[in-house]
Image 1 (tube, protein in one colour):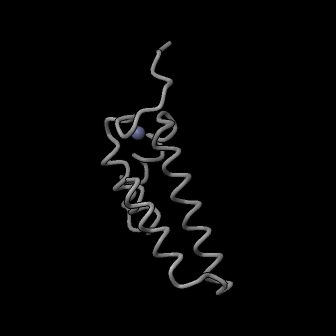
Image 2 (cartoon, rainbow, N blue to C red):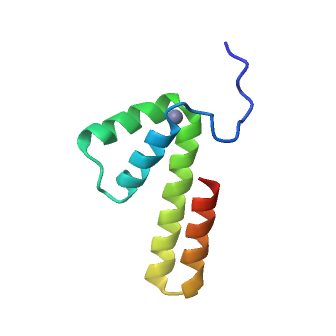
Length: 88
Ligand SMILES: [Zn+2]
């Protein structure tokens, strides 16, 4: 159907900025129903944002588990965060 299967740096999605914003709100449980609905239907069609969503979700899950077990060095959460922001 299309020849755009190759990955691009940050323009894999024209709505990416908006999606990322909602994505973070959702993970913080601060998104409105409208925003949640928008992103949920968007990631069904947009593999790029879907991947971002999965990565962010996994990082949060990982942090939650680590923090719960209290085995994480205090600098690790910070360094993951920094990485995420750098790649965004
Ligand atoms: Zn998208």
